Length: 384
Image 1: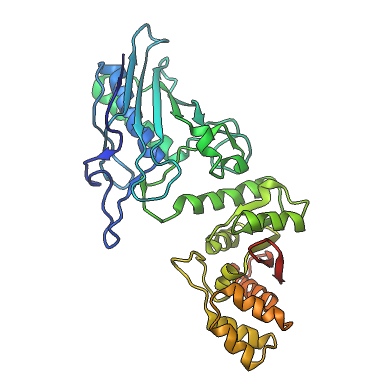
Image 2: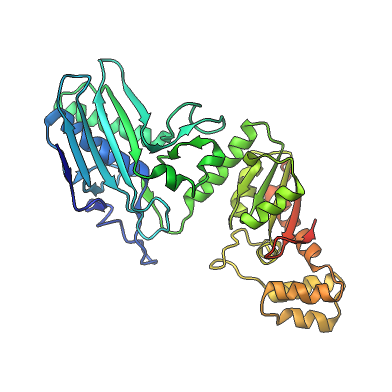
């Protein structure tokens, strides 16, 4: 029996409608893949024991919220114990967060196992498998993170107690088109192959918190350290990554950290989990923000300070007239070009200040730092 529901996003519950409305922001929160997989697990195991799918299905998250999820698909396969199974699927609603997994269909198939087998997790189509050490899962395990596993086990135990089951089940998690979606994530670089990870520590996606990106930075450091890398490079984007690879051709892929705008996340994690050397590479304008003390380089949260650039230009030898031009330049790159035209090494000065800020955040951690500033084409315009 297979049915397709019209819904799929989380509804109702203490966490609020199709995702809770965040105070002060007007933005709607969403649900992690781990929460969706937990809801699908509870629905499927309930159907396996009772023959009926709860729809919507309500779960309890680690901080006590109790959202309900509509089922997008459900199927019950009858038969003797080894062949019997139930599948339930939920469409992930990431709220107002620009999450690449928003709208993905998370499927869970539950099969009974012999007594005392416990809960066994499998990766279905679209869910990755761990192939490198350094992650919070053993090599060969499905990429279903520890907190989602804990949540699923807890809800299996709850359903078993309510309906007289043993709680011994195989849980296979799949994500439609997950392997394709995963190409837009860190998973291939982290050695998670074949699809997405099932993630989440609270079950809730906070819009624009970028917690998944920051978590990926941390996992990237963990994987690099586990592989014995002594030199990692934190890059703001693909152009800076190409520049790093041209500069340090021996750097392997797992030593490259997709830092994006989160310089602070890289530095604070390396402070606690150091490697011998860190290269920071990014656009001149972004790294001028780091030089000015900003650890979040996103344009919505920090701006290029032209007065600060004028001060640095003066330190680099600019005349008062040139410094005045820098202070009213349209962009950071224009300020750089003005200085370059007169032989003033503003790029090097910005790189040096950015390095100073990085070392200040590292607070004496045994990490050597070098900084490379580039222009939009990837040409190096400053180093320290």
